[in-house]
Amino acid sequence: MLKNKTVLLGVTGSIAAYKIANLARMLKKLHCNVHVLMTQNATQFINPVTFETLTGNKCLIDTFDRNFQYSVEHVALAKQADVVMIAPASANVIGKIANGIADDMLTTTVMACPCKKIISPAMNHNMYHNPIVQDNLAKLERFGYEIIKPDQGMLANGDMGDGRMPEESVLLEYILKEIAFAKDLTGKKILVTAGATQESIDPVRFITNHSTGKMGFAIAKAAIYRGADVTLIAGHTEVKPPMFVHLIHVKSAQDMFEAVTAISNQQDIIIMTAAVADFTPAEPAEQKIKKSGDHSEIRLKRTQDILKYLGEHKPDQQFLCGFSMETENMLENSRKKLQSKHCDMICANSLTQEGAGFGTDTNILTIITMQSEIALPMLSKEEIAHKILDQIMQ
Ligand code: CTP
Image 1 (cartoon, rainbow, N blue to C red):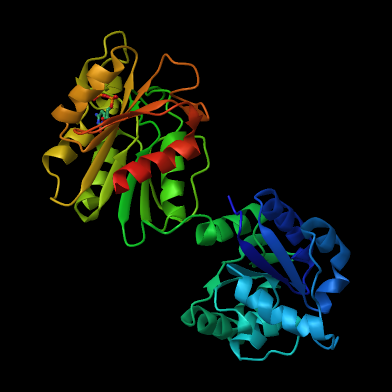
Image 2 (image 1 turned 90 degrees about the vertical axis):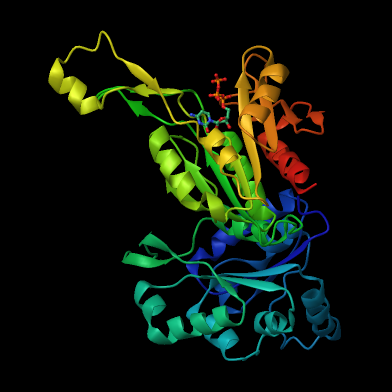
């Protein structure tokens, strides 16, 4: 994923420095070229040899080592970098960078880097909330640096508060968002629905389906990586939603209808992967329970067809994509849905094929538009997400 990309990791003196060894390893696994720059203080917490072994590159520490090759190297590195991440970033280094001080290898290189810089502050709660530190962070943000909000929890000295550096997987997501894909969706507003809706029968039971939300989450994540502004409206799901989306949780089909239609007109692209329950109790759950407590006969009514409503009220430039889950006559039924719901695209998947449908990490899809039908082989949901976005962009 990160082939031919170069990431500079700037490590400063904080106990969280040990986590960066794992981040470096994760980046290497994605075929990234990783260079680590450490402050002298950072070497008190983790040995440079650890980073050198993991990255295969010399760990750069100090410009006062007046070695000619090094001083050239830091400028060359600065030019080569696709992104710089300073994590953990101490109050001291944040202060230096914000005020144009470049007195060691790390701060000098960061100053020479034209690429995006991401900073993950890690320090004691009171230090983090010190107005001088906050002022320095605000200044860096004004100059285009991205600041990762620290986590809440127990800090290294046993205090509770915010100031903890987030986990390596979170730091990795910031890097991937920045450099993993070309930004062909920049400026596009995309709404994705995902997961299963739930229709309450009474305070205990509900009607739902087997959707896990994986496909919709994969599309939302791929769109984020490609630069889109993504809103994710999610019904019930056990899967962790992707970072960087505007996340709205809903329960019933009616909730989803209201959440979707409140913002649908502002969207460039809408992708409805949600498995919306087709039926809901005809009477409100509480009323039913009060009346008799007898559930032997529950009268059902159809839920609002959200996709159809969107198709019928579609602004001119909007692209509308639906999903279709079929157990038989997949192509024929899906083509009908394309027409009846006034969509620009339907992604059809069969529930009977192995490796496709609910809960799996793979899917087998046919992308149907008025002009074409593209049958994709079995692919991971991540790969399929990109194929769908490629097709929409075409
Ligand atoms: N959909 C919707 N609102 C509903 C039902 C479905 O918006 N009340 C959307 C789904 O999100 C999906 C598409 O319509 O994008 C097709 O859903 P699917 O369940 O395959 O078809 P249905 O229209 O529900 O018809 P059937 O269940 O009879 O196949």
